[in-house]
Image 1 (cartoon, rainbow, N blue to C red):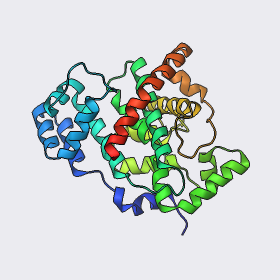
Image 2 (image 1 turned 60 degrees about the horizontal axis):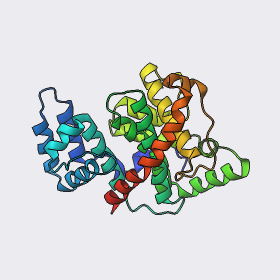
Image 3 (image 1 turned 180 degrees about the vertical axis):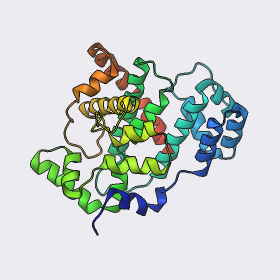
Length: 287
């Protein structure tokens, strides 16, 4: 079979749609007449998701001074869109729990994904962006296309890894050489099928090509931020989704962020501080 990114996504039935509770939660958040009580009611119908969210908001990652013991309180403190995005993150992690380590270590994969998500959140905070959790989610999901590839075409993924090693090329370039598409293409299609916001979809689809002419200003910024976060996570060697090298920085993408180089050192320090807290959250979700 001649694989395409579209065929891959279409054939993965187990992740073809997001959990119903997330879809209902998203509808409640986007309802202009909705209330915090409506959102709490949706979440209350999934005790597992409620428990995971309360675990996250009470973790050291947030560091709130007092315990948040109800989902209604969590909505008030965290924010509706922020809590929705955290619900998405936990749902996706649980969805892929138990994947085999046939191609790369899943522990290492999530370590890299978390590092990218945390870095993206830190950079967005420096930018004073609204809802920094959406950048955490985009960073967390930036390599999700590789999970689909590991599931459906592990032999071809191994070929790409070998090609990357023998030719000293970046893995996504080796993927494109062997398959005619790469993991970013697959990830973007999956998130589009999930009907996630275009900002998140494009950030994932173009994180290796953040200045692609298809992107407009806002989406160019989102893809640029995830691009920079991915490079920082790779340079820190916090896990790996299979990539052996640190991708080159797109200078236009860095300029798009409008941040001074002086923030890199405190960003790395914050990443070192927040990374383990975030990993503990993932381990709790997958337990």
